[in-house]
Every structure is written in structure tokens, then in C-alpha cells.
Image 1 (cartoon, one colour):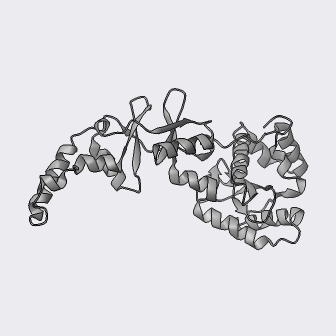
Image 2: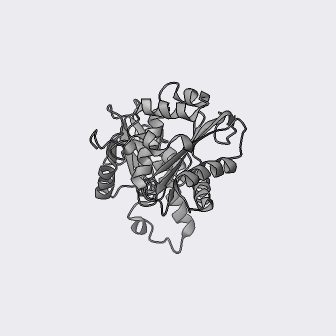
Image 3: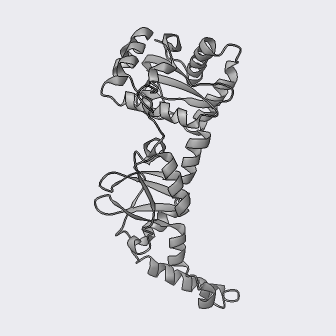
Length: 311
């Protein structure tokens, strides 16, 4: 995206798309008001109710309160041709179940159904803007929509050229130490829906991952039927033998069972490269590393599809 073709955050809304409320609305009323602004200003003849339903449905899947007094409710809407933004400023703050900090800024984003990348670009630009020191406090203190628009234009937050790992990852994933007993990996996987857990060294650098197949191989060998030919007729002795193998495997270290050929990327790696690597490796996760190889995030395959295709 060249400078002449650059798209800026301020181009998606105007003064009429901003509401400043001293009273504290419910979440439904807040979404209703902001969606109503977009419909009234930009979508004549379109009913607001389906839009409101889509936003609330998306919110039930995963709340969009991001902390620091900011919420970013959004939805992909069939039938609109370009993205729309509305901003609600609530100086008194809206109580939130997701954070102890009341929500003071609410950016409602509607994106065409056929533009999944665009919504991620806009959310990333918003996140970059609000990450600037004091930006949330300054915006929440403004009482004039024109002042807010001027602030956004001065900031000139340009949409990123492409979707990257930073837009897709979950930060600070659960990890295991390479020196941990294999029992720790088993407990972690039994405790949830995990199929693969990253393994790090003492400095937090990724050294591999352990998955359910590796654990199965440690606890139940491939030659199980040959080792225990009487399994059908002598269940007790078979289970006793398996329990003995599991006790032995519990003395094994994670590093002895981990896979070192894993999918990795940097925070600025384009999504298309991540997808290609996941496919080539038949991997279930891509691990996001910093320049020193430390693990900073993870992109599960299901989450990748969710962000690109559904979110």
C-alpha cells in the first residue's frame, strides 16, 4: 500500500458518528445507539435490528472489552459495501464484567461480509492508536465530536498493509519447561482441550512442543498388542502392565518426548505465510517468537480460521 493509496482510520467516520453520553447506558442500549447512528447517517433504508443482533451475537461468542476502558464491538454485515465506525464516549464509564476498569470508549465497527481482512486491519489501527500514552484519557475527556475528529486526523493512524501474526495471536500462552516431568504435559492436556503445548527453556525461548500423539507413544507403545497378547482375556494384568509403563514414563522429561519441528513466525509475518507453513507442516499451531526466539504468542489453527473466516 503506497502512501498515495494509504487508508487512514479517520476516513471511516465523521462527527455525526460520535456520541458523547454523560449517563451510563446498558450494553444493549449503547450498541443500539451506535448502530442507529451508522444506519441513520450512511445506510438509508436499512433496518438497524439485524445489525444490532449481529453485534450482540458476536459479543456473546467473545466479549470485546480489551481493557484500559475500551471496548471494540464489531460484526461482519452482509449487504454493506464498505466499513463503518461509530464512537461512543462515556466519561462516567460503563461497568464491565470482563475488567475492573469501567469502559469509557466504545468503537462500534461494521465491516462487509466479504472483507474479513479489512476488519482486522481497522482493529489493529485502533489498537495502535489507543496504545499511545494518554490517548484513551484524552479521548474520554473530549466533549466535542469535532475535537475528536481533529485528534484522529492529527494522529493519522494508517491502516496496516496486510494482516500479520500480531493480529491473529493469543499472547502469553501456557508453556512447559523442557526439564519438567512428562506428567506435567499429561496433566495439562487432560485439564482442557489442548492437543499441543509449547516447550521453552529457562530463558523463555521456544525449543519445541509436545502433543497428544507424543504422549500416546510414551504411555502406550505402538507394539501394544504384541506386548500384551492376552489383552482380551486378562484385562487386570494388562492394565497393571500399562500402569507400570505410565509410572516409568512419568520419570521421563518433556524434552525427551517433544517435537522440535514446529511452525514458527514473527509478530509481523503475513497471515498468508503462516497459512502456508501450517499447511506444509500439517501443524495445529504456529508459535510467534521475538527476535531472540522467546515465545510471545500462539496462533491455533482453529483460531486462525475463526479470525479470518468468521470473526
